[in-house]
Image (cartoon, rainbow, N blue to C red; front, top):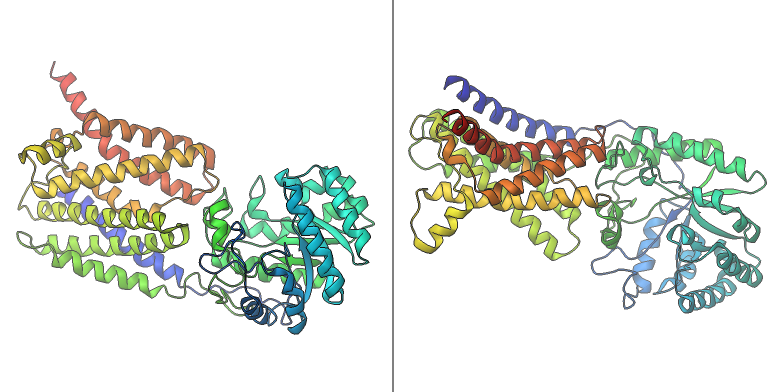
Length: 545
């Protein structure tokens, strides 16, 4: 009994301390090499960063005033902007860029539809004739070969048509491997524009090796095309999103990459363009969380990090501590009667751990949610996790004080029976724990299956599930009536889905993906809290025969 109490307090205390340290680390100022003091060469610009704006919608047209405000801000940090299209208001961009002293790499979008491509070329050639003085070069097509929108021969035809219509340099932009795979495109271009994005490589590159990777790939392309100028048309690092192998998106990693690369590129006189000016929320529809967080500025136009001085992952990190304190107070206030000083201490520590984790979970959902439905689902699971954590802590606190047995989460089948007959062998707290266990377990199973079958753009919601998982695990540890903890077959089946798919996730992601490994541990604890009582009960039944 004493050892179990010690284990409970040790786990809860560790959770509270981990929360404090997590937010302290998020607020720690990290020294990073300074970027060059003058304006950086060029940055990709798409104006679709405000709520409801998306180039995927043909009704989304950006007004001149927004582009003017954006370019005024960009001009303070960059000398040039790269665009990808002249549609939906962007035909006026060169005129506005001239006003702000910006040069333009003008992009003409080439997609799978021939009619749309004809319109893009017609509009683009008109812009070239009008604004050639402010345009450095024309980029005809962006990752067309990567997306397989057009064959190389047809892409060459588009390039030649534009080249015949202007004296400006003409190029095509694609991931570096596709230039090496389709060297015939070179004949229709003035120079080579390559995309080198270490995070998106087939074998993702960790942030501390990302700059070296860009330089090595640049050298490889230069060696392949020694008589052509090479422009790094896209490079950068995301500030938020899921980890891919050792490649971790974070604000500090983004700042480190941008500053370090800009410094080295200046020293080596490399031509480059950074991705990108503003975070693009619409890209989360296509690329998950990470797609919307490549910007130098966030979607509201706030600079995400300075070009000099130390950088912190979260400048509002104190809010994590405030959330922990508020939740600790709330847990103690709601503890009600039949609890002593040790129990109140356990409630306080549990509340602090829960508050720290769920505040991070809320921030994660704000990054992940692509629409109000996803935000609502995320919010519902945060609420369920908070309630489950409270009810588990309340039972553990009463048990630690010796006032009551810990109790058992009610199996979901008994909840249905109670709903129909109003009769149950479980009290209200146990029924709540059972319902919340089923909801959380079901959501975890769905996420695990998605992460196993289609992981590229899926997130690992560790912060939301970690505290309730630990809570149910501790309930299993201290239970004096393990038979009552035995769930029904449907819950065991879901738990086995979680356990098996977790093994697949671990094998697919690899041990160096810290986010994935944390998620797998949380899932296994939760699944064990459901499966272990059944295994224990089955073993006792066999022993009694």
